[in-house]
Image (spheres, rainbow over the protein chains, first blue to last red):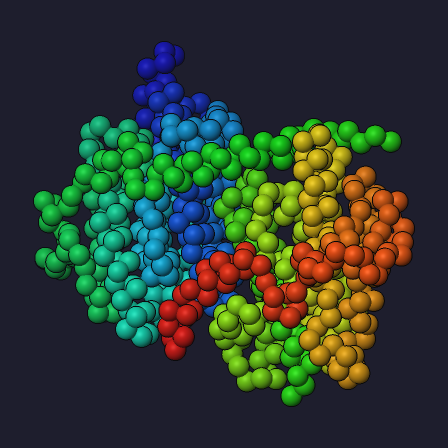
Length: 305
Length: 277
């Protein structure tokens, strides 16, 4: 059987809903595509820990301090699970880490932005986690089976995070003027990045991940689901949206395509977001500072008897 | 209401809160992923212990737990200065956790004899959790102490700095004499400190780490030889007019490190003290 015939057979298999295991034969493009996708997800959990951890010192109650720490801890744990399955596809964790800190790989756009105050914790925990959950739930049907198994666990924990974020939001929404202003300010800054989070309109013919069912739904489809689910809730709490302002049309909440400024997302794709350099530098420096710790753990005991 | 009891549990809660706050600063930036997850759990435990102590204080004073934790001015906190020091590096962090947990363990053992039922039960519960922290710290201390030179010398430096500053954990609580006569505390801080130094010096010696207690930290009577034997020091050492580094926390005297920690920690709470969060 030629390589092309095997690829065709593989395409037919995943096209019919077949699932792929790490040890199965797979086309090189499939392996590279899945690896890059999972690696980016792992990087995002790793970098996603940073914006929220910035607010742990400022948590306004002991319970919030503990739960936010626990949440960030979960995210770091998710990155560990994801790096592990990415490793099975043929790239070491260390190489992935070095690629990340040296700006050679990517992470989600929302983690390139700064946090300012407790309102950001509410928006991240509710709307950004909500957006992530929409995309991750869609990936549960992915053709790459090890990923779906990890995602099942991640989604379960993300559900808890979402409730945590919703809880913080409701506390602010029903609170004092100052608290409401905090949420509104954060929403004003985060709305465009959230819209970007789903990515530009998918090119169904060119997107290999869609063709091979690593992804099963288009970017615009996922964004539409998010808007229908969350826009009414935000409006119900009497907050307002900045540009691009969602409006109702044909029973759905939609955005005017030409109201979306894609320039910030394009900059982030070049790793030139507002916080990209600083956060990668933080990670890089920490990695270097801990070379001696890794060494201490790697070397067998050299105790002099 | 017993003022001596409130003073003591508040100081105990402050130690746990401030150290937990520092520990949580590692979340997302520990030396590697698995450790990040482990150390975050420890941070949460410490903050949880603080919450439990403050709850006890809350039943006695009527103040809410969060008002005690976040609503006081910086000078009203009673934790040891050691707890507020920045994390520095991993060697310092681990050494501090290791010595703190040993100190805490002794203190909790004494509190398990307290005449106060709630405090006694709380001490038992906390000590159970702290045991796991100590196992974690023991593992790290052994690995680093028996590992390559670079880590070992960092650990040596940390041991010297931290051990001196542990004196601040055993300064007497405010109204301690009353707490003892009422039976809330069965062993004085001074006596606990004496036990701690001898134990800590043994443990450090066991790892081949310097166990010299600088007279600047521990008061003269606690000065230890490098072999770990306690030797009597000169009580009236000339030129020791300045308060030794690391002392003063139990009476609300803190370092500049705490000014910024306090500002960060209470920022959101102070933004609107009337709000619920």
